[in-house]
Length: 267
Image (cartoon, rainbow, N blue to C red; front, side, top):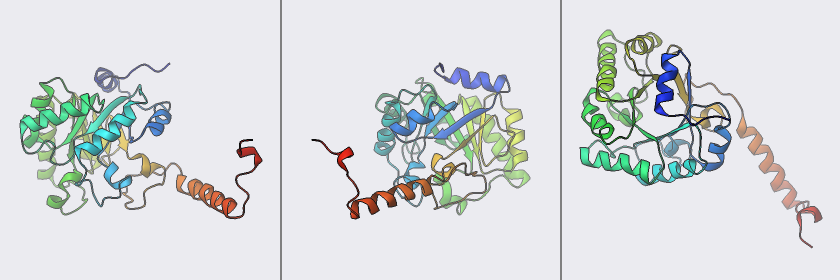
């Protein structure tokens, strides 16, 4: 039987050279299925706003939405480490509010760690949350909550100066007490350099093969989100076609009077 994974296990995986597998998850039935599939970390990402709620980006996602989805995933009692995203404006304005919202994700949502975007400029926030015994994953590089500053979803750290800044961010995050860092949308060579420099695990998403682990959005790997098709996504299944076929057959049978039959009726 799979044992419960903690942040200590995640660190041990880096130390032992074992890759870390993370996927986003937003609901109870998905969590039950996914937790049986060899994943180490389930992330209730603010990407839920795009792939489930239909927002254009992650910025409109609220604390209430993240808590709702985290609570649903937590009810599956996953053995994977359960991490919840801190949405836009839940930690950027005030350290007290950041601590409160991180605590709400643990108390009300059932999260075992939180993730927030930002580098050296958010080390005070990371330290404040860690100091209240809530584990933190940081997130640097292409940070979706910063799309307006970045001018869209653009690869970060391409110049030498920008790469040095991201490395400095990663080291500052480590000093602040984060137990891991997500590297998104950066050159593979930079991902390799940061991973080698840090003692905490790196989780890549469009950051190359040398990171300690990888994370993707579940809807992307299943072919259920057609809004965006980033280069770093690999589609492992075409669930949309399976769903479409089932729904079309159901609708056709209802209209033809072929469903329900006696088999599906009570006497």
